[in-house]
Length: 354
Image (cartoon, rainbow, N blue to C red):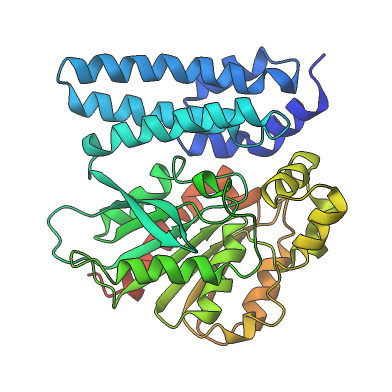
């Protein structure tokens, strides 16, 4: 009999995996064979290795477009092998490093190509991926903030609509995320990390630092508006299914999510993690948000109540678009066609792309 953690992961995250690059048949074949959560990481890593091998073979034969696609997909699969697998940190990190390796190897062969960038932060480094739309001189740029269990190796599908509209994307791993999770715990004042990223953008001569957008998904849907509240360089913000107050949402979170939050908060106990969750709040910050903001939520969200989005929309002081997808799950990944292109069109307008 399949254990409850596997059932929970499949129930909560199936639309996300498929929407963000997992082939449906692979998803069905991998998950149907799982009985224990302890097997999750190995099963997804084994399927990732098939795509990685095809990518390396294509690369060896000079088939660069195919290599980029295979290796990009392998990176996504390795990411999903590790994304909530926090009970075995050694195996989790091994899968994570394979995700980083595969997407980094894919970057020169993606369309458009990507560049791995290093961003100085508190004496250490945050890592990101910058991609620029072809044929656009000094494009506007959107800094992309991932969630609790996502990172820059997952975001190709999120990046594509913006790149197609002439907007560069800079997705990065911040505190508690991806490569940043080992050095920096989750923090409520995420504007500190956003400031470092925007400072980095200003050092680049190939993107337009006067036209910066901010995008955040899931817990990043808290981080992005939180940063926008304190960072006047942000011209527009997209917030997808983020909590308004993490402590208030705590009891309704899935068990795997709470444990992942504990580990990535560098907390020893659930009680410590809950105290850290209390630092993630928009209660005083929301009223500081004056830039245009587009907020998206799913009314069937079982992770973050849709009312959190409504609350944020009510409290911001700038122009606001609120989209509640009536039959949408968390991040409305089961109805991506209801918001992915629409938010990209909106951001293009805000950043002056015609």
